[in-house]
Image (cartoon, rainbow, N blue to C red):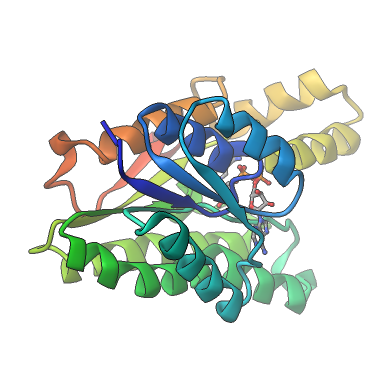
Length: 256
Ligand code: NAD
């Protein structure tokens, strides 16, 4: 379905980004990976799916590096047809204790990076007559939790940004939407499970149950593959007129 298309997926060396990159590659898309961590392992995983894959190590808090990455993807593959803004970090602390450098980093990586990739990739999508922009927000783009002020502010901002750019592109063949997961068991959440295990004096399995029990009525983690399949759907013809929507995949979290 996506043969001859190229997807740039930010923060795709692990977790949700890697899962989405693999689902898009399974549909035939060429992939530009990005992120810190083990890029060789991520490249090897995607390569087995038979499409062309490359990697750029841009730091998503640095606009000049983001520009270099978008240009590198265009130079190597001829286009960025699908842009998945997925890179993100978390820090958990009360607002009066929140380190200011963490606030700045979360806003830069979880929100401003999507502005930079979008402004850089959108002209090419319009020119070529097709494009998909998919922003990995969060259920925290729709509702809040205590101790996560920077993350909640950034993700609400990303949902707002999604709607605004969807309106600007509404008469073009480029669609812009957001995916809002609840808990997904990735390295980002494993840290929070470990913190919960330590705080409650319980093992990892019990801490997982408690974390889910607080917020996610299905008592199941969403998987990266489920999010990847939703991204594939958003790239399909059936989704040509889906614009500015925030899809929660949250086991009922936001329904409460
Ligand atoms: P993860 O920690 O597994 O992956 C994050 C990715 O972003 C990694 O590849 C990491 O190297 C990369 N990254 C971090 N800082 C970067 C930077 N400065 N420049 C470039 N890359 C950087 O986390 P994940 O859970 O897969 O999260 C992916 C996205 O999904 C994030 O935006 C996160 O907020 C969102 N999300 C996650 C969950 C969840 O439960 N895991 C829920 C809702 C939303």
